[in-house]
Image (cartoon, rainbow, N blue to C red; front, top):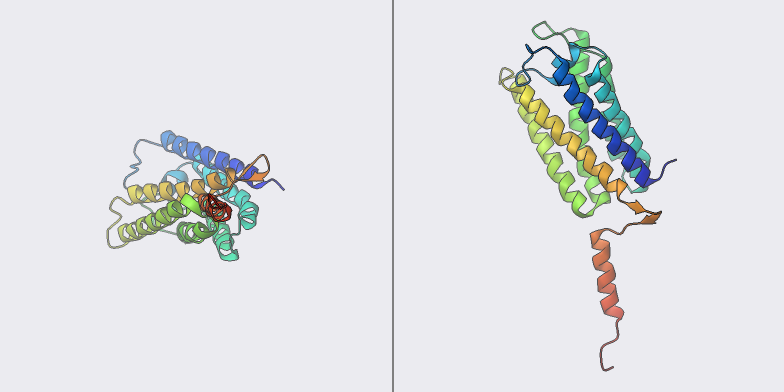
Length: 222
């Protein structure tokens, strides 16, 4: 089983690869598709099995790589289960296509939609739960990105229903950016957790060591 640092580095590589593939997938589609009003799934369905679907699968795999390292870092079972739900939702959305833009939704399209909803909601909640065990500055980043993701998810829901899909593509892409950033923060923290097999103390641990050192230092002149 790879160490914590190796798991973080491998996941970071997967996240970077997924990001590159997603960008390429947008560049290869027809110019008639509008990224502001159409979702990523609308782009992916025009190139079934293409680079966007591959990007989703790679991102899911990068998340799975993190799970053993997160358990060693003290993450709870609920956080792990939510990350599994995120990965499963991504894979389901990649395998099961949505409908072509403008066509009525069928069973596959509904399955695709709700798999995406599960993924989009599971990751920010998992990020919030991971803030405590990962600690330090990572906790602040994770909580901020988790709240941002949930607000963007709410904006996307509004756009999909009462908002008549106004700027739904923009809302979704910013949401994806926030959630991928959250996952990258987790991976980067784990990648820096061990150097040469020795655990790297977090900032609060440095402060505790310094306080303890001052307490045991004899007073001058004693």
